[in-house]
Amino acid sequence: MDKFKEKLALVRAELETKLAKAEQTEMEAKRLTDENNARDIEITSLKTKIQFNEDKLIEYETRMTDAKAGLDEGETAKTAGEGLSRKVALLEAELETAEKNLGEATEKLRQMDIKAEMFERKAQQLEDENNSTEAKVEDLQVQCNTVKTDLENTYSSLQDL
Picture 1 (tube, helix red, strand yellow):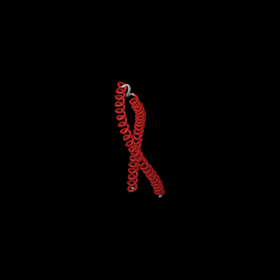
Picture 2 (cartoon, rainbow, N blue to C red; picture 1 turned 180 degrees about the horizontal axis):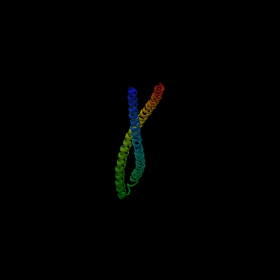
Picture 3 (cartoon, helix red, strand yellow; picture 1 turned 90 degrees about the horizontal axis):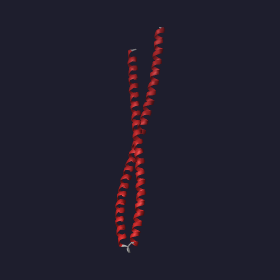
Picture 4 (cartoon, one colour; picture 1 turned 60 degrees about the horizontal axis):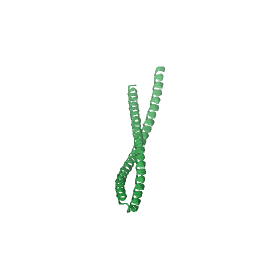
């Protein structure tokens, strides 16, 4: 009888341990999901910045093309040509800055995509582990119920004696 109680206590302790681990795994999965959502927001923000920079790049390229065309026509008006040259230089500097920003944003987006995939895999792994742990807990509960039934049957048999 004492052995049975000890075994029952061990099964209960193991069940409590498994339940605690399942709760911990669920909390970790939630944390990773929250992190993943934050990453998604950051990715969306970076995509918006990239689109903005690409639009500016197109605008600057158009302005630069217009300015260069104006330079060709501006040979007769030297003053106007010099002003356009300065404008082109500024636009080229802005274009260079925009291209640099676009490159950095693209690299950040790529890194964020890699991290997001990694977090999704980790979340899936934790979810699978959680499901496995829950199945084990259910098996232990079934075993515990079987042991309880056996104990009750044994106890009633002993009382009948």
